[in-house]
Image (cartoon, one colour):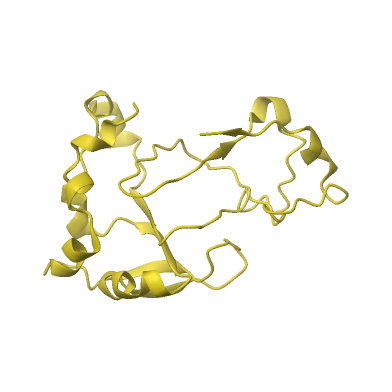
Amino acid sequence: MKGAARISKAMGKWRDEYFLSLDDDLDSEVKLETKKKENRLQAVDTMTFKNFVRIYNQTEHFMVDSVPPALRVDITIPCPLQCKQLTEHNFVDNIMWFSSGGTKSVVHTDSVDNINCLYRGEKTLYFEDPSEHRHDVHIDHPDGAYSQMDVDAVDYTKYPGMAKVEILSC
């Protein structure tokens, strides 16, 4: 479904000026990470969405939270996904990752399937095949399904299974 997000109003509208011009409920608080390299042990910060838009280019803050209600009207779900079984029972949430770039996630697994729509910028996603490498990827926090390993410098002595893992990128 490459390019499917182009049908959303968000593709043309979602710019800082647009966000700051809205009078709607964009003064609600959103959750923010405070370092571009994710660490799930650090405290999560909060501030209003509009204040975040004003400061994110000058800080390490990035937003990982539900799309603010006032912006949800700008998102169009691609036609193949609009069947009643999906829209009424299987969509969990619309999560917005918003930063000035350069963010890195921890190695993790998600409990639900994802659809990633990029409205601005670039994003590289890295995947491994869990059916092939389930025991090689070290998830040291099973309660949150993530690892604290350093994604920039994997310690192969501490995480020897990672040397076997084939990483796919897109």
